[in-house]
Image (cartoon, rainbow, N blue to C red; front, side, top):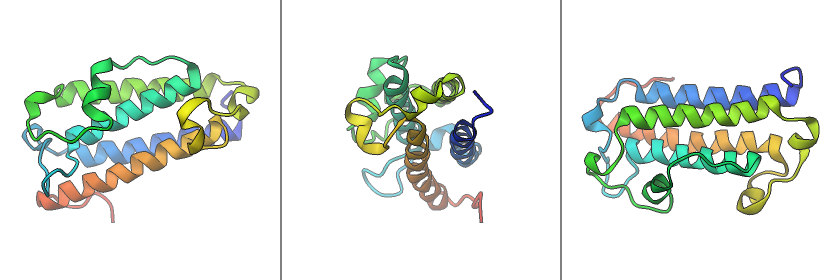
Amino acid sequence: MMDNPSVSNAIAILEFSRRVTLALLEDVPEDKWCYQPIPEANHATWIVGHIAVTDDSALAALSGQSSLAESWKGLFMGSKPNPDLAAYPSPAEMLRELGRIREGVVGWYKSASEDMLLAPIPGRLASLAPNRVALAASIAWHEGLHTGQLSLVRKSLGFAPKFG
């Protein structure tokens, strides 16, 4: 249903937010993925895992299917970041899962009928958007919130800005 402007816009905003996130991560060395600029601040590992869990929750709300390991939910939702990188999946695994789950979200939008797009969101995510097509903007906004945190991590590590 890619000829639908609502779908095209939903996908464009999801792709844009992900490009920004990946650009901010591309030059962060693996040994800095748990760097916290202040105690208990979100680090890159927690942010990436949290975004993946959030995408999986959105996919479950859209399609009824969750595909992320249950252990990720405990690590990255309602938790405090652990400064020990060994407590988490590897950055490479995290990036794979981040991409895989976003592909599922985008795939759902590409295959959704107009009725599906305009249907209300069930469950706890209903407060985020009036319908399923609008949920894409909420997903992208949430990711943007956390890319702001990644920008702070980068700045505190002395990395050059990626944008602006």
